[in-house]
Length: 204
Image (cartoon, rainbow, N blue to C red; front, side, top):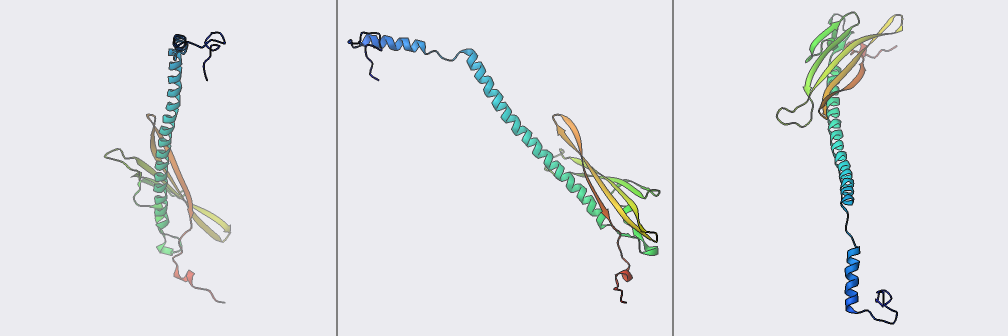
C-alpha cells in the first residue's frame, strides 16, 4: 500500500517527507511490545503439561506391555502344569493294577492327599519366561489341586471325573509396590480305559 499524507497525519495534498516516515517507523516499533513474563510462564506451563502427559502415556503403555508379558508367561506356566496332569495315568478299570498318578504328580512340593474328599494339593516354583539379566528374574508359584468327583447316572453305574485346578501366582512391581496376580486354569479329565477287552467290538 502506498503511503500518503493522510496515513501519516499530513494534509491530503501533501507528500510525506523522509523524516516523517522514519519517525513513524520508530513510533510503530515502540507500540509493538514483546511477550510479558507472565505470558511466557503460562506458555511454558502449558507446554510442560502437554509433554508431561505424553511422556506419562508412554510410561504407562510400557508398564501395560510388561504386565501383559508377565501374564502370558504365567498362563503358559499354568498350562504346562495342566499338560503334565493330562499326561498322567489314571486307570480305574485295571483291577488290581489300577493306577492313579493324578494324586501323586511329580515335581511338586508340599504334596498332601486327603482321602476323605479325594483331594490332592501341591505347589511348584518356576521362572517366568520373560527377558531378564543377572538376578532380576521373576519367580512364579503354581498351586495345583486335583479332586476326584463321583457322578452317578444310574444306581448300578459309578462315573468318576477328575477336577484339575492350577493357580499361578506371580509378582509385579508397580510404582515401587509389589503386587501379586493370579492366573487360574480349571479343567476336567476322564479316566483312561486301558482294558483291551473294552476296546473289542461287540457283535450280536
